Image (cartoon, rainbow, N blue to C red; front, side, top):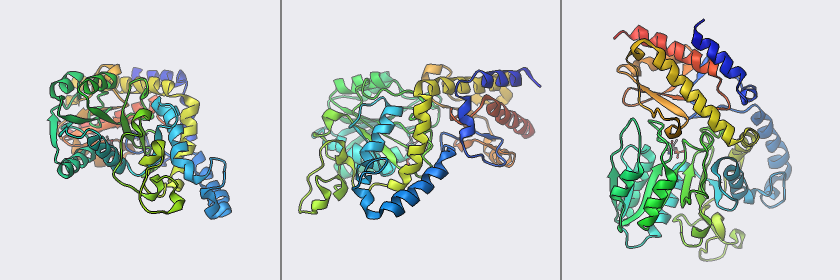
Length: 412
Ligand SMILES: *Cc1c(COP(=O)(O)O)cnc(C)c1O
């Protein structure tokens, strides 16, 4: 037993969130799940909640579920109701500004288009070249549709976007700035309030992608004066594969901005079925079609855990987990040639760390075969995503011990 194992045990013993680990469905054969930032693990209560919904609400209420009051309200209101739950538990946002609907990509398209159309006469969109692929592709499509130019900011791939870089490119032509709050590759946590101030001074809107933030880091959307935001619920929010996205529109922008997918569920009085589209009042106007009710059931179950734990405690554990992972890698002789391509400063680091070494691609199969599941990102990056509610320090230690053995097997 090494000193590091001892400290893992001590860290677990002192972990105020340790009790949550048992509240997930076990994954047989998995020694260390290091990819909670891609797909969170299933909470144990989910099976029961899904079964109960199927029996009592779907079968029991049938079509009446859309309008009759159930335990979580009429289904028609779930986009806003579940949105408010996400907002309170994870986003630092007051009610009435968040909905759950669509996929992240579709929600991103709707809000980015609304922002560009909301700044007529401005023809530039600012985005960083290392942003998540779907974000870049969506913006390329919008730029082509609306005759805009993309202003690409080149970021340091081991870090991420800085306020200084944003200040250099925003100006009177900027309609929209789109940034990931936590960079999917490096884990860099952007200074959202500072970037908002710079963009707002130039008259631009900012859309934050919170996929790698929600459920791992503290967010204060209202206090940071965020305009627009989107994010996943299947990563740190444990909503399950393909669970719907959330979208946030600050209250005072809701009347002003119009999203482009004018569907009946975002219309004022959808069941009137009348001619012409008038958006529903408030944040409901960003909903388009029938809300994914069934897919919100696991999300509601998972939110209970986050509500109980509190995002402040979750963030504290997240920082401790990533710091511990870095400490282990740093303890290897010469780090075994492994480079840390994530921020060292805890306040600039999200919930994952990325390691790089030539030949890492070849390691994925042997790691998976030994029950260690990180994920791989080009070029040569292994991402260690540490979901605070479901990951122990011992699991981090076990996973990195196997990684070390596999790296040693690679040779130099
Ligand atoms: C995971 C992720 C997405 C995913 O978008 P989907 O439409 O849910 O596939 C988008 N942006 C970022 C930054 C992500 O990490």
